[in-house]
Amino acid sequence: MYIVIEGIDTAGKSTQLDILQDTYKGAIFTKEPGGTKLGLKLRQMVLNGEAKSKIAEMFLFLADRAEHIEECVKNNLNKMIISDRSIISGISYASSTSSLDINILTSLNLIATSNILPSHIIILELSKEELINRLSQKKHDFIEARGIEYLLNIQSKMKEIVNLLNLNYIIIDASLSIKEISKKIEGFINE
Amino acid sequence: MYIVIEGIDTAGKSTQLDILQDTYKGAIFTKEPGGTKLGLKLRQMVLNGEAKSKIAEMFLFLADRAEHIEECVKNNLNKMIISDRSIISGISYASSTSSLDINILTSLNLIATSNILPSHIIILELSKEELINRLSQKKHDFIEARGIEYLLNIQSKMKEIVNLLNLNYIIIDASLSIKEISKKIEGFINE
Image (cartoon, rainbow over all chains, first blue to last red; front, side, top):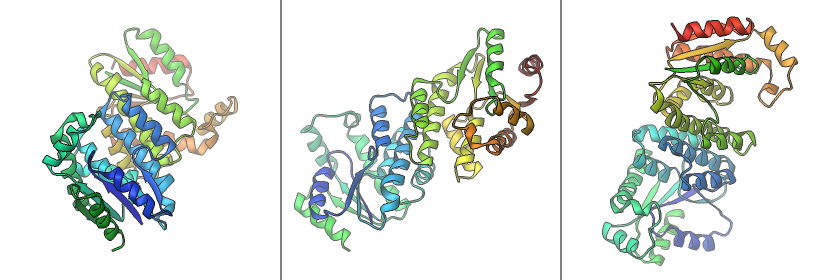
């Protein structure tokens, strides 16, 4: 079981991951990017702006993804893996900075994951109003500074990709209460 | 003019590059991998074995290539660029460690180079006998330790790829004298 939580910043992924850690104590909790030693280093290099080329930056994220699948996912598919982000975020964010077609980005990402895909995808979805509200309460970091439309575009790409790849997903309204969301997530996992 | 020198280890690339540096003082001399600050760091990470996944390793080399094209090649195509290795080595070496088809590897590499390809490719070719002879005189490094057949396979891949991409190339017998080789290279550049 390879479960992933997806959602743009402020959607509440971390809160739900904390609850999942209490509920599923035997599960393997991991994340992308930065879920491996190599990935952590690559993520830091990207954050430092060390890649001048946007294409180089994309390949660094793909290297992170490939390493993560190899080290954390591939040999644990018989266990419960719960990951903060995945190929879904990967393609969505890449498509916002790349001139490459979404089908090409998907092919690149499937090479990175050796065609391994999540069995369960949870997307926490924010309305524009709720996103504006939440961002106004938070110190903006690098990605958030790119703006509301940017984030909403990523969010809609996430939904496009789970459909394109014909994956098993649930979209949950992120403005529901923490408890309501966690109940929906648990229901989806135990379906 | 984007000239590249290709050849397996011990083929004599460095010697010819030294001569070219004396002949074409105004040219930009560069190399792959490790021709940029990012690339140098990535190359070192690969040499340290920091990527456990072979696919991650491939993406690190692609990131190096993309950064190199962006930083050193793209804006200098109106000048003379002379590079130690290029996409040709990139695809050849990748095909020896990857299970991916050569056409897919080529597509990945063309994404990395934004479809920029060398205008002149010089391949220094070694016979099996000459390769054995040269390796026996040299302390083997990591790649050479993989063996004679491995290197000859890379060399034949290089020839396959320049044909596949329909590029402008010359193959020079690396067992000729240093002077004879440099004369052939100069003739090819000035054609």
